[in-house]
Image 1 (cartoon, rainbow, N blue to C red):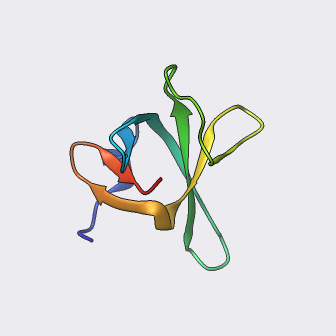
Image 2: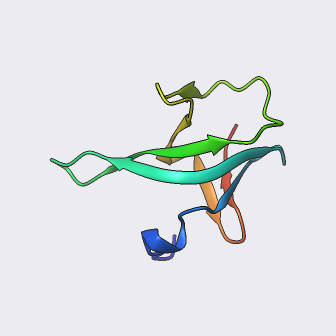
Length: 79
């Protein structure tokens, strides 16, 4: 995957591989000891129903980074 600056990802729309809107990227979590990225933290779309992804205590979706399949106009994640 091409190198993309994190500042260019903030607020980017996130869609599932099924074409359904998940929401917009709020943040990304990482493991400070290894530097590996862990989760996309997503402000969920109002229309989002029935997802297998976990929610944070603040009500945001926690999508494992390894589910990202593409980053272009939208971020696409495997559902």
